[in-house]
Structure formats: structure tokens, C-alpha cells
Image (cartoon, rainbow, N blue to C red; front, side):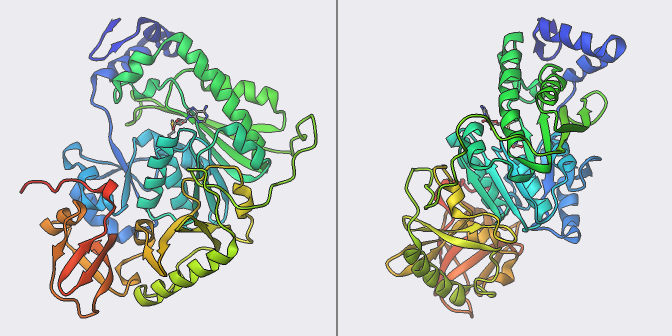
Length: 472
Ligand code: SAM
């Protein structure tokens, strides 16, 4: 073991001395004795640039050079604990990890896949760039991580994303040649995580690196097969390892002559303010030959299944559910149901979702057939006993407080906002707008629902998201 403030494996130190050489390697190794960098990315779906000034002051934000919405924050300001975090105004993300979605360059209207998406750093950044137009399929292979991904997509108020829980080989069968842009932030040996995550140091070994490289090539092959001709793929890792970075890209280029390498970029902790990242951008210049073997199955029709394997119901109950949701929207939302992107309703049991289909309805429910979809679009409501109860995700997807007819504005400095987030009922002045579903906001930014009646607000903040109010 090398004696630095982090105990690095000898083989790793040797590898980095060979890769960087001389004085540069020593500067790199010395970076392990320095504090790690922390960053957050402002959510352009919720914040106009002029809204950002108070946040910059509150959290001591300084710009990240390679990401216009990215900032370093002062550690002691703890933005992850602030009610603005619950309102989805930003996403806490290691600064160098912000580079790959910038290089992918998603444009409003694009059909984008994030193939290894949890917990959602790149997905939320991509959705910010889509500006509510087009479609994002955010996929994660591990079920528990897919749930965390879905929560982050909801928190940031993203309406045009579908969360799937599938392996790349399964996804590839559904979406051959389908996407304009693909993000593959591959599972890796995490050499750039050593300052942040001591477990990554313990897990590291030359054999682990080899296993990661083989897995990366497998996943990257699936990614290439899901690109449209002309489509872009951003391959990224948080490791410095050449075998996993340049090595994977070289092998991919030799297997797919239709691929062109546009650029590669590396962020180093001794050269930039970031933990370290590798990104390669590849463009598929021509169509791939169809895979050998029997003819491809035609796309299945029928209704998709949710994470528990329940099949979505046929269209008549969906019409009825939308009628009930329409009634809720008329009574409680300022713009009725107009806020929804192009899409169609999907009903899983009594849960109503709005499946985004992209401009020109390029997506359809039949494509989700056979795939687990923990979030088949925006969760609108639970429909039961002839009533629609609004979903938490709907509150977070509303643009501002004036999108609801009844609202309560809590100050970010108040005790009440923490009591609301902890699940307590609140006593309030009687609202002139009467009783019923009420949008609770922090300084005007939606946080969740409550039900108001005669000065009492029954708390509908989801149980799984509640947290103890801090002692004052
Ligand atoms: N892109 C994410 C973000 O920005 O928040 C981080 C992704 S993390 C680097 C890699 C992800 O790949 C993990 O969520 C992990 O569960 C997933 N993964 C692990 N094995 C995989 C496999 N064989 N195929 C696809 N994804 C895999």
C-alpha cells in the first residue's frame, strides 16, 4: 500500500505512474491528500436565470467551467438538506460528471436513451436540455436503483421521461436503431471515486478492472445497436483506467466500422476542480446491418407491464380515468390539463400515468410491452371510487404556484416548511379559495399536496420522502 491520506493499492499507484509519468504522476497522487469537490446543477425546468441569484448567495455557488448550469458549492451550506432540494430546484452532482451530457448535446425534440441511468445525474441534465420536448427513456438494470432514479425524475418535475428497468440486451430487442442520442455512463472500477467512496478503493484490483472492461464492451455494443444512423453516443466513466476508457472505445470502433470517434475528453483532479471523468463521443455514420439469424420479431402490440409485472388496462378504463382526472384538473389547476406534453393515458391498476410520445407520436405504449417500467411517464393520479387523487409527481411537474387554484406559500426560512416535509398537518389562515386540494410551495416552488379545510391542512407529502423536522 502507498502511504497517502488514502491507502491506495500498490498496483494502482504503479499503473498511474506508468500512465502519467514523472512529476505529473506525483501531482496526481498528491491530489488524494486534498479535499474532494462538491457540486450541484440548477434545474432549468424550474429556475429562470434571474431566480438563481439568491441560491448563488445562499450556497456560495461558483461556476463549473464545462457546464453552464453547474456550480461548486460551499460544503457547510448543505444544499441537500434545504427545502429547495425537495422542490427539485437542483441536483447534487460531482462536477466532473457534468461533462458528458454537455458533450452529448441533446436538443429539444430529440429521442434520447440514458442506458445506465440511476440515480439520475445525467438523465436530469439531459431532461433540462430537452426543455419538455421530445422524449427521454431513462433505464436502470437494478430494481432498487431504478426506484431512486424514478424519484429523482419526479423531484425535478420531468414530464417527458419514461423510467425502465431492463438489461441492455433486453432493451436492444425493443429499440433497434431507435434513438437520436444515447448516454452510456458505464459501470466502472471507479478510480475517480476514491476520494468520495472508500469502498471503491477496497473493490479495486487488476482483475476487477478487466471484468469492468468486458462488461463495458457488452453494454456499449447494445448502445450502438440502438442508435439511429446519424445518432450520437456519449460513453463516459468515472475511472482513469485506459483499458476501460480508450481500450473499450478502440474495441468498439474495430467492431463497428460505421462508428466515428468525434472526440474524447478527460478531467483530472490535479488539473481541474473535479474528481475525474472520461467521455468519448461517437457518431453512427451509416445504418448497421441487421443482426444474423431468424427475422427480427415484429414489434409486439398490447399493453405494457409495470415494475410488479401488472399489465396496463385497455383503453375504456383509461378514458374513464382521464375523465376523472379532467374533473380534478378543472376544479384544482389553473390551466386544466393543458400542462401535459404530447402523450396518452396509461392505467396500471388504479394508478394513472401520462405516457409521453414525443413530437409526431414517435413512441407508443406497445413499445413498452414486456419491459418493466417503474414510471411509464408522468404519474398523474390515483383513481378510485369515482375520484382522482393527485400524484406527488404532478405537484412537482407544475411550473409554479399559479398553476394551481389553491396554494400555500411557505417561506424557505420558516419552521412550517420543515414541518410540512416531516409529514405534520399545519394550521393556517382560512383560504379565500375554499377547501380542497392545495399546492404547498416553498417560496412559490411546488413541494407537494395538502388538503385544506377550515384552516387545517392535511398533509399529503409522500410517507417515503418524509424526514424529521430539525430541532430549532
Ligand atoms: N448515470 C448515472 C448518474 O449520472 O447518476 C450513474 C450511473 S453508474 C456510473 C452506472 C450504472 O450502471 C449503475 O446504476 C449500475 O447499477 C448500472 N449497471 C451495472 N451493471 C450493469 C449492466 N450490466 N448493464 C447496465 N447497467 C449496469
